[in-house]
Amino acid sequence: MQEIVAVYPLLSPQSLTTAVSNRVCNVLALLQCLASHPQTRSQFLKAQIPIFLFPFLNTVTKTRPMDYLRLTSLGVIGALVKSDSAEVTRFLLQTEIIPLCLKIMEKGNELSKTVATFILHKIMCDDDGLKYLCYTYDRVSLICGALSSMVEEMKKEPSQRLFKHVVRCYLRLADDLTARELLKNKFLPVSLRDPQTEMATDDHSRRWLTSLHMSLGLAHFQ
Image (tube, rainbow, N blue to C red; front, side, top):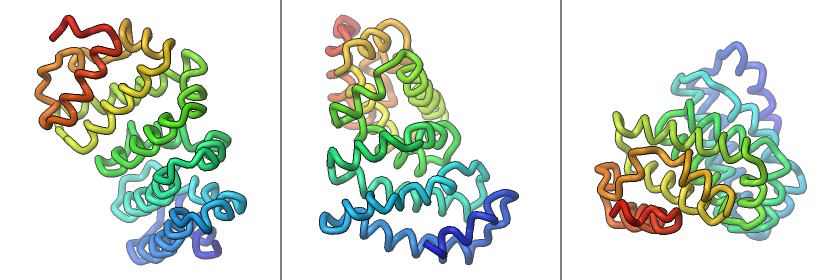
């Protein structure tokens, strides 16, 4: 924790070097082990350790040391949500992880966007997580705005790995009645209303996209 806190003064103004970034990321790799192990995960949460990583996730500088630090910090949160634990979801919903992930989904590099979208999807896979994310129009709007922004970017710079996570987020949002209507009538990007879109280049993506269309009542487009 001392290694992590010692880096805070280097974040603004950004003066993080590659050597310092690598050193902190080695610490984060150790924390990821604690986050992923069932015997230490609960204590990891009780100690509020993920909160100490949020200053790294809140940065916007796109230097390589900062990108590496953000991505490795996301990896710790990703290790937590991989457990599919209700305890993890409850903890994260009480933090700022949702707006931080949305920020990275809109402004991060391709790999960071992929991990942030994965985290968001895992949270919404929990019923309480989905209920929280779809509780108000504004929340649904913010999430769909970030997803739509990535879809538009992928028209220019395709990423099948990221596209899969984006489609799965839309598909899970459609499980909520309110979000489903908003997707159908307003928030689903035009490019995803075409089941033959060139963005879906593998069987999994095409199958998920077809399921999304059926859930939204758009099957007639096929």
